[in-house]
Amino acid sequence: MKKKFAGGWIFILKGFPGWNQGRKQVKKAVLLLFLLVLFAGLGRAAAGIEPGPEVVLWAWERPENLLFLKDGRVRVAFYAGSVTFAGSQTLFLPRRQPLLVLPAVPLTAVFRIENRRDSPPDARQLSETIEIIARALADPRISAGQVDFDCRASDRPFLEELLRGLKRRIPPPTFLSITVLASLSHSGSWIDSLPADEAVPMLFRMGRDDYLVRRRLAGRSFMRAAACRQAVGLSLDEPWPPAEYIEKRRIYLFNPRPWTGDDLSRALENIRRHLKEAESP
Image (cartoon, helix red, strand yellow):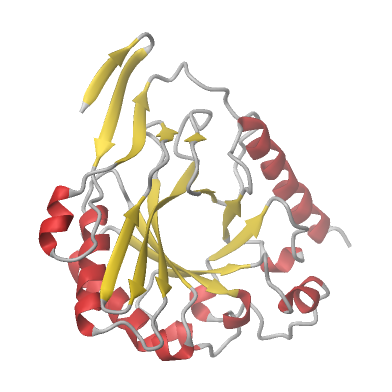
């Protein structure tokens, strides 16, 4: 759908269906998720975006105006919805808040998964989850998908089958990412067996691992899992870990408040300064 406004055309994408129980629900529930705005004059551009590590902004469940991103040098990983397993039910709650972004900006759809069962999700719930995520990733405006699931040891087979099922369903160029706890990034971790294109260690909100990571006491195997060598997740409201855990990686940035161009400019400057200090003798 497109609508005319004073500055240009607004494209309104209606898409990701809600799933409670049964396929009919999927087809009926249509929710506004985000806006694609085709007017380059809107928003305040982030100054000083220079060559450096690839940066991805996490845009969580809140109104986000990212029109300050004028090209594809900074990507956006937006919260697309949550899948919750409660008893025999598979509950899907799509994004409810608007996201404003220009068409040139590459988009990653992020799906939060929560298991409230005492046991892993069953085969039907696995199939329903694959269907939910695959439908969203079939949209040509989305170039990647990300699964955010703090799985228990008993849930590991489910996660592996979910990723394998998605790999079979989504278009071949679509990039498939997962987030993982910092403690899972050691060499030899079981996540290396997962069929994902990358695993993003979350180096914030680390709990008891925080002290070890920030003081370089996590051991030589930390951040050496093969799946974790491409990317890292950081937050603007916490001190960043040592530069060796950041350099030569795609950097995902979490902001506890809605993004602004100034926030991005400061974050990019912090990245440059952080990496430069690491090069100093």
